[in-house]
Length: 116
Image 1 (cartoon, rainbow, N blue to C red):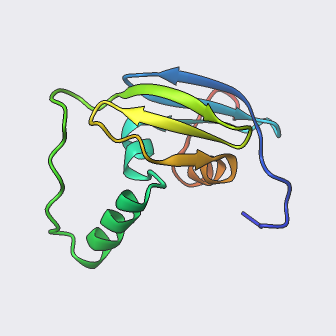
Image 2 (image 1 turned 180 degrees about the vertical axis):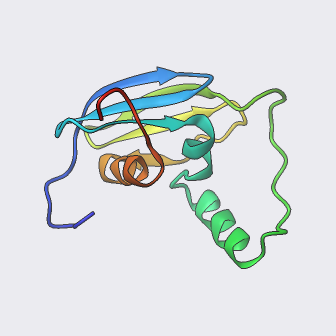
């Protein structure tokens, strides 16, 4: 996304804790992001480092999850007027998803919803 364009703004968020999150943007785009995509692409420093390690060595040992059972969203909270913090059932909660970053995820990983 061009850094000179206005900050994208979500108009509606629909969170399904087991499946993921649907985001409708102010320009009408609507996309679904799975729990796995949101967690895998967390903008936290540790997740970025892990993605870099996996890019260099696909056999990198992944850290053990802190929770048993399927990965899910434990909670979502706003961070000011510019981002979300998503807490996952594996204990991860340090990623702050700015609107710009969330829009980039929707553009690269999001699945179309309805007519979007």
